[in-house]
Image (cartoon, rainbow, N blue to C red; front, side):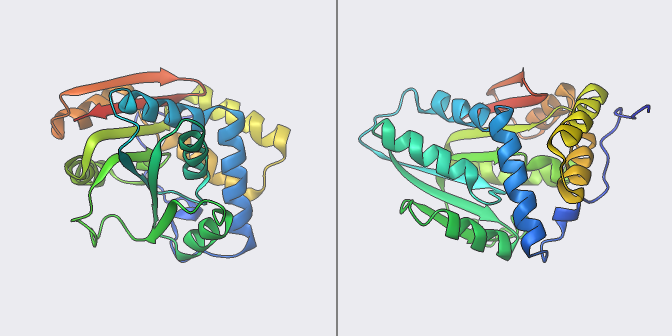
Length: 236
């Protein structure tokens, strides 16, 4: 089957319904976290954090915010990294879904340095909050181009060191490979449908470069990584 990838798909995913809750959502979040681990997606974000921390004194506290944190899997991985490497991390997760935030809090009970905020980032309720590093892991593709520009401008202003973005490369090859992943792991309908749609809502490199120009990101790197991801690091 031919898949059109010239333009970003704007259809809403099932999980874009911020009122969704229940076991089906919990299962989908766990599936996404597991796939990210298996395909090295979380490692890509963590490596971006390491890049921004290279010149930072470990004795000073570092605040890291994960925007669109889901069940907090990325923050827990960063917390473990900080603990084993002598960093003083203050970690914050933001997500618009109240049920997802509740799930993240339960899963992070053994991580006292992780806190969660239920917030729709487009509303900017906490616009005065500042962080050292902001993370967007598989988050930006959920938004329109205009929304992405606003979000990045907002969080670039809030971030002292910079931003790490980890998102999908829109590609027919990636789409068909994920169909194979769905078959191998027998994914349920929600992660299967949303996963395939997410790829079609992903990005081409020239689109990321276009965003960078609009937000005046002068010091940055945009690199293609396995599995069909872009790692975009913006330094302040």
